[in-house]
Length: 177
Image 1 (spheres, rainbow, N blue to C red):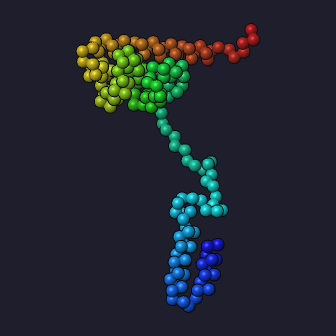
Image 2: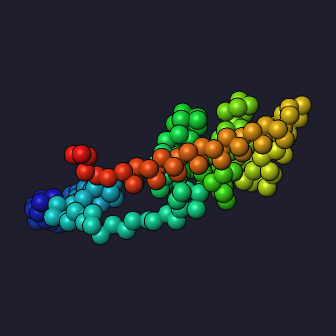
């Protein structure tokens, strides 16, 4: 539509020098106005909408610890309560090689009121044991006994959650007895 106006103006203003510069300005303005929606990232008329079925999905490979938490929802819910508010369970478990160590780190964090991310950083990134991480943060504490206590609590929590999951799987679905 804007080009039709420009061509009409060109026909009317043909041959006049002052009017030629006005014509050039009008053509440049029309070209600019017709390309603005494309430059601004807007869809032009008649453009097709993207097909959501064709969008690629990225699959994230879960670690063995994350898979165990994903399968055992009883344990995941119990541990989630002990993590800081708003912490994503799978993100918190990332980097740990053993489920027992992850759960023990959560327990030690709560028992000693140490930020979980500090313990995790020392264990996962720095390669420390739980006892060494506690000693690094609280040198005057009874770090080995606290680490042992957290590991025992973690083992008990894992055993209990697995027993609950197994019991719920064995329970008959028909309760009409």
